[in-house]
Each structure stands twice: as C-alpha cells, then as structure tokens.
Length: 106
Image: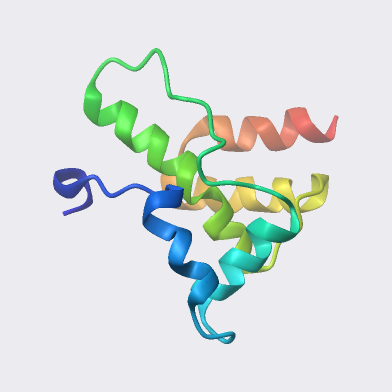
C-alpha cells in the first residue's frame, strides 16, 4: 500500500502534530523537530536512482529518519545517529547504513 499511495512526511502532512495531545507520538515528534529547529521539508531531493520506485523508497527512508529518532528516543549526536543507522540496517538491509556507522565512528 505504501508504494501505491506514496505518502510523504512533509510539513503539509505532519504540521498538525503540534496540535495533538501531549502524550501522543505526533506531539513527541513535533517536540523533537521543534527543539532542534528541524523541518521535515529540509531533506535534499533523492537523485541518481534507476527507477521512480527506488527513488521513492530512498526518499521515504530519509523522511522517516526523524520519526525513528522520536520513537527510540535517540539524540542527534554521533552515538544516537550511529544507533539509528544500526536500526535502519535491521529494517532495510541497506549496506550504506552499516558503512555510515563504521565511517562515522572512525
């Protein structure tokens, strides 16, 4: 369904998170993003993909990155980003996730 509908994590779709009750995931996401002055629209476009489907999957991985930070309570420092890359590897099996952990910590 995700590949058919191709939902996006962009301000136009998640901006209402600020209005959600305090104890919801949406409110936690809004706090995470707001406390860091992040915007879901800040991600650069995906380039150099062979198909539109692959480009969407890569874009989706970028867009949900901060949702994972929120879900797992991971900070945006080297340790938090490295931990998140291990989780992303477990989810997507993309070698670049593990390579970024090795490259980011050396």
